[in-house]
Amino acid sequence: MSPYEIRLLTEGFRRMGLFAEIKPDHAPIVADLTKVPPPPSTRAAWQSRGLTHVALYAIETAAGSFLFAYAESADPDPVAAARVLEDDPWFKVLAEHLRPHPRVRSGSVWMPMETINIIGPTCPRPADPTAVRRLGVVSRLKPSAELTYRTLHQTNWPGVVDQMARSHRRCWVTFLIEQGADLWLFTYTEYVGTDQSADDAAMGKDPVTQRWWQHTQPCLHPLSDVPGGWTSMQSLLEG
Image (tube, rainbow, N blue to C red; front, top):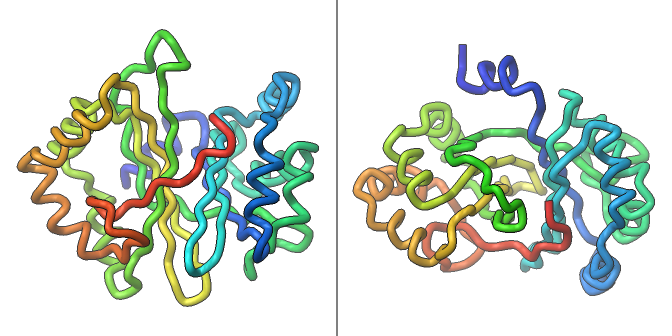
């Protein structure tokens, strides 16, 4: 049984990644619309339908502007999670500024992405929930390296996971989506420490992590020259 199958049987919920493309020139509108967060009653409504830790991130690139929604769902069907957002007034306001993915079901703008990697939780959740930094990062995957990248992440090295815990990364959940001829990777991660720069530097100096990156980073086609190959996304909604 694969690690992924074990999670499906034991966690009791699903981690969902949903993708949408922002229409050309509509990114500033989306940014303005999301400046006012949903009220607590809206989050309560999401929770009543089994959706928690809903977060939203945006990225503007030469290829277009994209949204990445992350959520944890009591329903194992990712389409059901997408419907919760599509039925919600806060998200409906965004819908007219989004362009559906070619493979999305009729009438929807949110495309469920494929889960290809889950690490964590590796640390306990802090007593103060506001201490958690919920982050979205993005990269691209070279199509020729897809098999290698998938195989590596079916067997995450224990030493890498241990260093993530020491560096206060609580989880790292990666989703894949095809966008034209490209493969895009969107990751949701949680940081629970107090000095992210120092913790990330410690991770970069870890010998096991360095060897791991020698295998994984050549698989990536980064959007920027940021070390590690992953570009930070703009947070529009905290989880």
